[in-house]
Length: 549
Image (cartoon, rainbow, N blue to C red; front, side, top):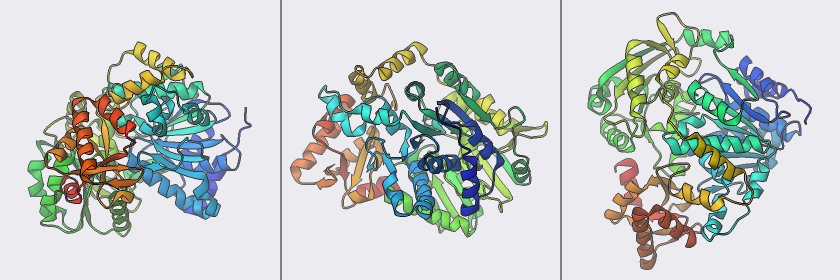
C-alpha cells in the first residue's frame, strides 16, 4: 500500500503556473482520492468548476512516482477525449518538455497512441476502455473472430495499478446496453485493484445508488451540496450572474426564423438532438448571418478540431458567433455563450448545455430558451417530458445549490427529472463474471458487443473521406450509411491507412455495407477478416451529409 502523497500541492503549483482560478473543493477532492486505497470514488462538482484539473494534477503526481503507475482519462465522447488530450499536452510540454509525447497517448477509434493502454498517461473514450476490459481490444478483435484468445490481459493488466477518471460516463447511457456495460466495467476495475474516479456534475443519485449496490460500496465521495460541501465564493460568482430561462411549447425548427435577427452580434449556441435538424438549421441561418459554425458526430477529426479552435478564439475575444451543434458539446467543451437555444433533453444533458452559458467569470448575463423536440430520440421519452414539465414550473439555478425557496437547484432538477433504465441485475452479475474470468468468455462478450447487446445498441461505422484519410474518420450509424450507399457515394474502403478505390474495392465496400444492413455481426466479421478500417466515401457526399452543401 502506497504512502499517501498530498497531490493538492501539485494542484497549487498548476494553479500558479497555468493561471487557473483556485477552487478549494478540487483540493478537497484530491484529499479524498487516495490511490493507496484502490476502489471507486465519486466526485460531484458543478459545471465550469474545472474538474478536468483533477486528472492533470494526478497525472503529474503519478509521473513523479507518488501515486499509481498510470493515469487514464475516459470520456463519453471522442471530441472530449481529443480536447482534454490537447489541453494536457499544452501543460505537459511546458513542464516535461519533449518526453511528454512519449509518455502520453490518445487512444480511440482512428487514433492509436497507446494500443495496449500501457503508457503512463492515457486519454480514451468509454467505448474503447470498455473494449479492452471486455477482452476485445480493437487491435485484437480479429483474433476473437477466428475463435482465438488474444493478448487482452496485457491492457487489462496495465489498468490494474492505474487511476482511471471516468468523466460524466452516464451521458453515454441512452439505453440498457450502455448501463450494463458501465456497471460491468466499474466492477472489473475495482476487482483488479484500480482506483476509479467518477467525475461528474450531473450523475443522478438513482444511478449512483445502482453503482454503489453493484460494486458493494464506494471507497470515498465528495458531493457538492451534500453535508454542507459548497464553495461559497463560487456560489457567489454564480449568484451574481443573471440567467433567464424560457420554456416553449413549439419546436425549435419552427422558431428559428423568428430568432435570426436577434442572434446578430451575439455569442449563441443552438443545440439539436438530431444531426439532420442541426445541418438544415445551419444552412438556413448561414444565408443571413456570418460566423456560423456547425458541430456534430458525423465530422472528421480535422474539421472538428479546426472549428472548435476558431470558436474558442472568438469566445476569448468576446466576438460574436453562432454555433449549431448536437450533443457533442455537452461535456468539457470550454466555451462561454450569451444565449443557449436548445431542444429539450434529459435534465443531466440540459444542465450540461446550460453550463456553456455565461461560463466565464467576465460573463454576467445569459439567456436559455428550451423547445419541445419533434421526437424524443435518442433519449427516454419520460425523461424529456419530466424535464420540460419541471423547467416550466420552476426557476432553475443552473450552477447553484444555495437557492431561495422559490428556486430549484440544478441538483434537485436532475433528481426530480431523471429516469434510469431498468436492467436485469442477474444479467449484469453474469456479464461481470465473464469479464473477470481470465480464461473464458471473450467470444461471448465479442458477440454481445457486435450485436449491440453490450455497449452501444446502435452500431457505429467508421467512414473516411477521399483524399483526407489522414484527417481522421467520421462515425456514422447503419441508417446513414444506407443512404450514402443508395446515392452511390461509396467509392472503396481504407485498409492499413491507405485508400483502396479501384472498381473491385468499391464493389467489396458495397458488399460490406449490404451485409451490415442484413446482419450486423456478419458485416463486422467481414470487415475484421478483410482488415478493413472503414468505408471510403466521396468528398462531395461527405460535404452533403456533414454540412448540407
